[in-house]
Length: 225
Image 1 (cartoon, one colour):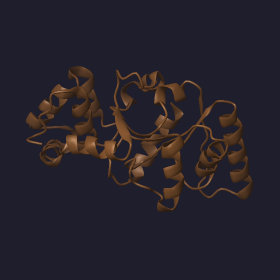
Image 2 (cartoon, one colour):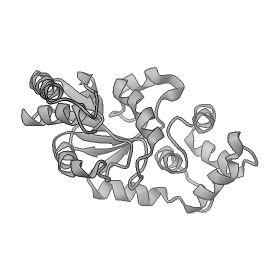
Image 3 (cartoon, helix red, strand yellow):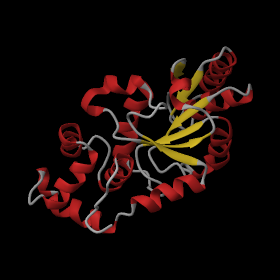
Image 4 (tube, one colour):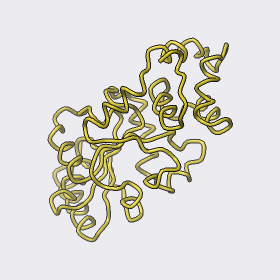
């Protein structure tokens, strides 16, 4: 990427999502103060950064290819949604400095319109049969009443809520801790394909990105918002 030189906001945000983790206060602060394009420039020139990360950021800038990431998400029927887009949900602005820089999305529905009437259903991975039945029933009843069901795509309660919404041809949104083209857990590959066909898969990290423990924790704020 030649030290990450970019000329437009969308490409800059795609690049920043590749070189940093969600809720990186240094990166977010630069974007809020200077905008995404200038933030990339400043990172490429920075001799220091919190936690001694300046060298790590620059090394990632050298290998990052935001155009390739944007092409890759388009190939799987996706897009990058950024602040200012009509599809950007205003609820995310309530997160303040913890709002995402951008959201990688894969699916057929409009994110903002879905979020106008949405409800989150999350719970234990090691759920009881009763718990899964209740989550699926809630998901189906809410979806059939016009609510979008938002969850995290995990085993247990999450998958039951998604499945309940899908069973009535409702809208469901899954916030992932990996790229929208990555099936994690792998046993949910079919579920994610169904969500992509009738709902939306969302992630703060770019296509191909693997799940990390911290990414599961920070994505919960998106589900709540």
